[in-house]
Length: 117
Picture 1 (cartoon, helix red, strand yellow):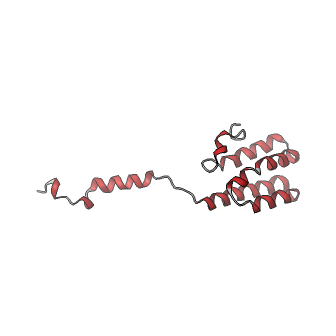
Picture 2: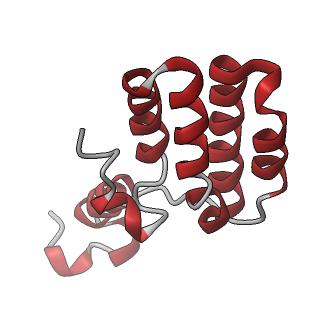
Picture 3: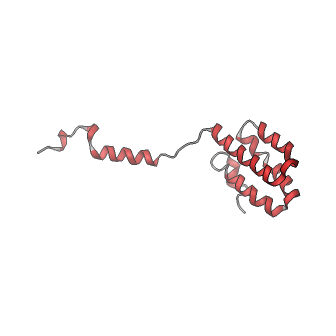
């Protein structure tokens, strides 16, 4: 019969179990570059869908934006262009989805008027 003190710490089943659950509980963090590319891709897709060839200038601005903050500040221009072409209601729906992509990556996303709709 083994006594608890004879169990080696590295083979203790409780330690392994706790490590496993701790590992699962760790939030997966996305690299900043990956976030920028994901948001950029969504913005470009929205521009193609809602503006077609008319949105070429905005597409270039999105393409050349260098960080998440630059993309964040392009949102009003995108909203205005979409609203002019497709109507404000459709533009707001699209912008709500785009703004959600900034959650946890830009401080303004939590208080954005687009996210509150």
